[in-house]
Each structure stands twice: as C-alpha cells, then as structure tokens.
Length: 240
Image (cartoon, rainbow, N blue to C red; front, side):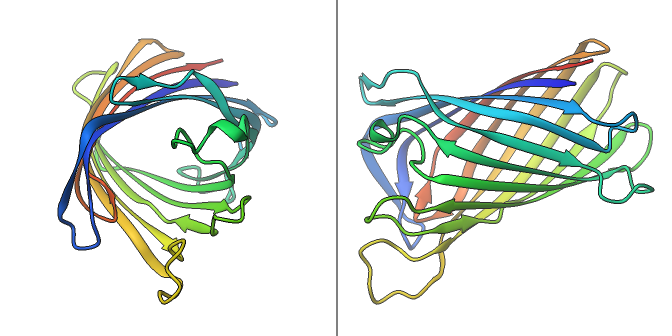
C-alpha cells in the first residue's frame, strides 16, 4: 500500500494575457490544495493498484479567505502495462466535484468532473543520476451552461541526483498547454487557448525505508492567458 499527502500552495500577484504581458491583479491570490491519495496493490509484483484520491482546498483573495473544504473525490488506478518494462507505468484518476456551489464564485477549485491520466517513465543514467519523464492528459468536463470542456496535456522532465542513499535533489521543467474554446468568445475556434511553463527545484529525504518527505518550489516563468505566480509543495509518502 501507498499513502501520499501532497500539499500544493500556488500564489500570484499577476497573470499574463494572450501576448504574455504581465497584468497586475492589485492583490495577492493564493490557493492551497491538499491531495490525499491511497493505493493498494492487487498483485505481488505490484503491477496493478487501485485506490482513492480526495482533495481539500482553500483560497485567499487579498485578506479574504474561504473555508477549507473537500473539493473532489474519486477512484484511481495505477498499473504497469508491460510486464518486462517495470520503469513504465500508467495512472488514471476520475474525480467528482464536491461542494459545487462554493467552488467558482470566486474560484477555489474546478467545479467539473475531471479525468486525469498520467504516463510515467523512469530511466537510471548511473548510480547518482536519474531521468524521469511524465506525460499527462487532464480532461475537465463542463457541468454548467457557462462552461466549456477543455483539457491540458502537461509534459514534465525531472533530473534527480542522489548524493546519499537517503537524500534526493532534483530539478524539473514542465510545459502545460490547455486546449478548448474560450467561454464567451464566439469567433475563436477550438484550439490552444492558454499555456504555462514552470521551472523548479526540489528535494526528497527518506526518514525511514518506508517514509519519505518532499519539498519543492517552482516558478511560472512563461505563460499566455495563464498564471504568473509561484508554487510551493510539501509531500509525505508512506509505503508498506
């Protein structure tokens, strides 16, 4: 079994328009999401795992804050599709929105059904360096008349360095375009409506062989019609 709690704080004082120009918001906006995921292995080889994910979120607009609330919950499946390729795996989660009336006025989290599929590939360069690749498909389904369906296809690359058997240092880059049709803009066809690129650094530390802590930071260095903030992450992972 695996239990992971991943705390993600995104904060911004500006966004970027369709030309990539900064637009000051006049206040700080912050969003804290606490993701709790449980996975249970169905086979001794750990090829098939099922579980549950839930998210708790709160938001700040200037000095005003929302309550901490459950915002989504749903089943998750993780599996190794090719038996002889253990370093390639797939994880797929379907999330149902909770507390829907409180999620988007103002925005706290997505008031949508979300299907999130992740493809992971892990490659050991040598005993000290590791390369991790991830490709995602995040599809968000419209549930209100004013919404349109859209999806993101983030691509991530992480290079890890292991100075000791317990400590990991890593750097990461992610490009995350979103495709859809902008609400209220009738003359724009379906296509890439916004995107961001983030760069970051992080570390992981094994307190025990089955207990890991993670800290990371990333900055949205480039974007169009998207955020221009920073993100701080703290994770705890327990294996048995």
